[in-house]
Length: 128
Image (cartoon, rainbow, N blue to C red; front, top):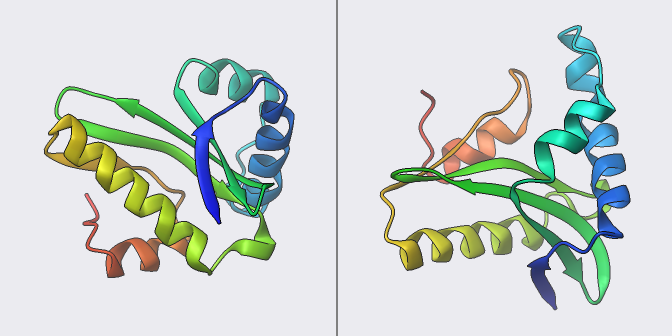
């Protein structure tokens, strides 16, 4: 069973560690240093969720509502669950949020070269 619930304070340590693990190769490839202080300051004021699979913490989602859109700041999943059903369930959750708030679009930014770009294209996202 997959559940998405508001992040607990204790989950932030897992979230930020997972972000660094998942993003390090892309950041290094673009010569962008990891800035832990910036990450913590930038993400704590967003609408954040922990993602659980069968009661085990497996990911982190950070979103922000803007005028006419839902902006996805980050979706991080443990490597062991990437490529499975969990990402699809998170997308379903996001689409339901968009429908509930009656906003017209969903946006996100990704680092060039991230393989998730192809997934987003298949799901109907457009590169802007």
